[in-house]
Length: 527
Ligand code: ACM
Image 1 (cartoon, helix red, strand yellow):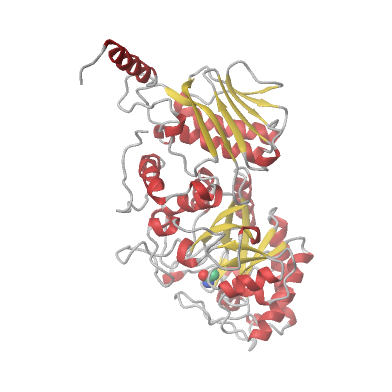
Image 2 (cartoon, rainbow, N blue to C red):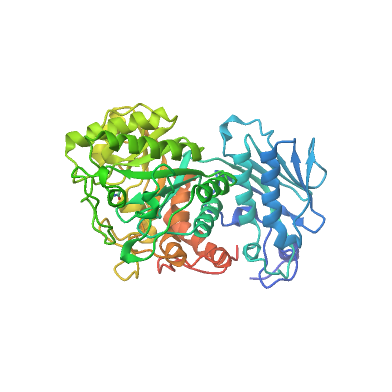
């Protein structure tokens, strides 16, 4: 093609323009194009305006008003920006938007954003994050993290400037309940591991951590009125290791750590089945009055509390009372799954009584899908894992559903037959399969208005340490976070897998030991 003067001028103009969009010479240029940032979960809307805001040692963080919670979000952002700026920027209060800097305000005045949505506006001078509630600011801060180069997460130096592409983001979640479950009973995990897990959930805008605190193999939460539960029931785990438990102080510390990240802890005491650890700790909880042996295998369905003994309900009342007092969130999870050693009538009688106990301590009952057979309160919540029929039964009783279909979100399911950890009784769940489904259409008769949210459980029969956790959870959990947060119409595996591939570098910098699925084009985060 022969270049005319006009087209030559156009080429020079475009070259100059694109040069201007790269912050300076860098191994890894970051263009100031907000539309090319690899967000997970994908925001509701992103509009690029083609320039950028540069973070420097002089950048200040300004929070509007005196709310302690807003200041704390400002401090959290300051800590996250420390690697970029060299020191955590000072957080100052401001009555109105400053001329330059980062401004956090609760004056979004935008009901559609709800409690967790936010509007983010980036100009060359000012980054404005506006929400209705502190939780919305916190979710928006996660978005800001993902706008900066992945090195932010490792604290490495960058050859180029730290810039945020300019434009606006408007964002709010599809579902108000977005969670994961950690089974700390089959294998016990330390407070430090749980805190890391909470941080990882927070990065993807999740807001629930369900802790499976008791099962046949271990009782993991101190109950002061029944001390043998942890002394005996907490003394081992699958495979015969030493187990462990959280003291009430440690549990309170976990709850607080989660609360600071706007994550609700849901404690689960699984009953009437999955109770061998309790039955080994106290002989009187058994119908025959004989304590069971501790159990370190992985079978299910053999244990049951004695549903017609008074002491059983005194025990549950004491446990729920202590747990409720330590748990600010609205739910107590009572398990209720796989109670194969409990007669059906006894099971229904039992769950009805347990629901009363939970209510009497000011909490709402959450249970696995089998609990739908009880006389559910209208505000009780049922967690679908296996049975569409039970989920529909729950909906017919006015209950809401948490969607945890084992074939899609069970994070302990192997990716394929070669995965070194995990099980496959529900399915092999490759990264595409875990992403390509929609909660509102998966189960006939269950639609979006029946669904409270989505939760991805990690059972730990084969999971023994944080490396194992990360390998099974990542990269499937970010996809589930996107299903729970982002609008359905914008979700598409072919597009997502490219975004996830580029996101791999960020997970590397976060030191997440993820499964490098062959279905994902892993690459550099060149946007
Ligand atoms: C379950 O997987 N037994 C809830």
